[in-house]
Image 1 (cartoon, protein in one colour):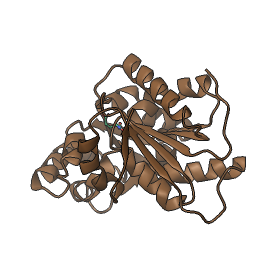
Image 2 (cartoon, helix red, strand yellow):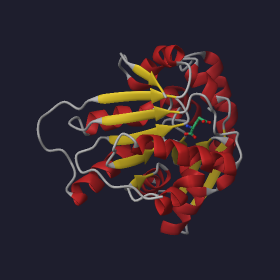
Image 3 (cartoon, protein in one colour):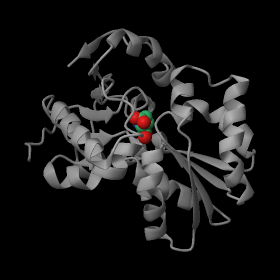
Length: 268
Ligand code: DGL
């Protein structure tokens, strides 16, 4: 399927649920004039435990929803979707599509001094091996150690970033990575930036944490600029939040991820 691209349209962002709001937060910060339409697939979250076929199907459907809003670009904010569906979406849709794996991998390559990078992500993302592949494609000499951390998503959604139990779980998950001497750690899941303090404490101060949200916003900026589609006028962007289920629950939790209240949420 292809679609007509809209020069002045909003940036479309989708995720399996709430986590992609950490990417929206960065987009708002770095590109304040841009309009954004966000779709969170709260009816089908989590994706991190689903099959490849399901993840691809959901990602395709989410892209179609965003295209109804005449988006000029689609950001696949979900690491799990980016791992399995990005290439397929790029083939099927004509709009520029940005994923989160490449930007995070490139940043990690730039940051590592020892050539020893850790990746933490959902089980599906780790199983896909996409972070490792992206890193090795750029620099085959870098060692990559990955760890699935399925308990982090519910902890972040619960708002338990500062609880001792979160630190204990982080310490347990990160033990093998720490032992292997990583100096850079990719937060390969939308939810993990919320747990940054616990993760940093567990892995040690000397390890650089790579938050792909920041890198993704930079990449979006670069692509819009090179295509001549970046808004240059000084206007404040307008935001629209769409979800597939439970708008009230989303509203309550969204503030943690976005850092501000969401007034209107639309169920689609
Ligand atoms: N958004 C997912 C990711 O970044 C995390 C939550 C889920 O499993 O759906 O991988």
